[in-house]
Image (tube, rainbow, N blue to C red):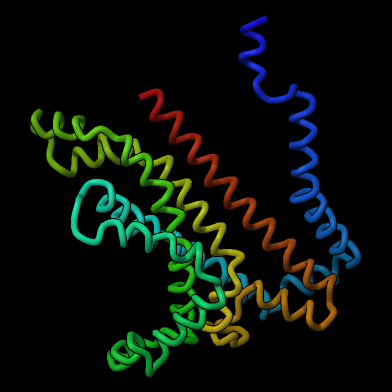
Length: 277
């Protein structure tokens, strides 16, 4: 009896499962069902006409392409930033560590206005770049920079705890046995960090695909050039084309879910492979 009570600190399985299903239904399942149901008001021909419109296809390419590019950049530089914050002590370390969470606290619209002001042709960063022939604001590059800004904390905060738990003695032992820095990184560090790094990449990618506030200013919203898919949805809603908006949203949902499923499968495969090794 004592053992049974120790295992059941929370209410019984039936009650907790009921609360879980209720929460998921209210927050996730019911809204998704309403989205799918609304899109069924279109015939297949109408649905295909909406989602295959050249303007919509261009928005899909920009949204997912920029999100993927930003997630890859964050995976690389987020890993480097997490490594520096964990492995080195230097003046201002706590300040930099706090600044990593700035995109979480900063309203996305404020971030978009700030990035636009910085990277405009007359901005502090945009002016020297423009002199070199590189325009950032109102270009796809500006969209990618905004997505990189809002996605960086996901990688850093996912990798950082794993690095803190990674014993430096293993790296020192590898060095004493004659392993080069690259061999140590490839054989010891990266296998331990791979699941967390993939998770951070997936979170940054998922956050970027649906981003709106930080992009709407810096992109310029030019159809076929810098218009993102969430803006297409907002435009259709403002035109009272609810069925068209849900059709675009359904395609975004399907693509995002498929990509995240593939990433999770790869993460699971990597974890099992590392466990067998």
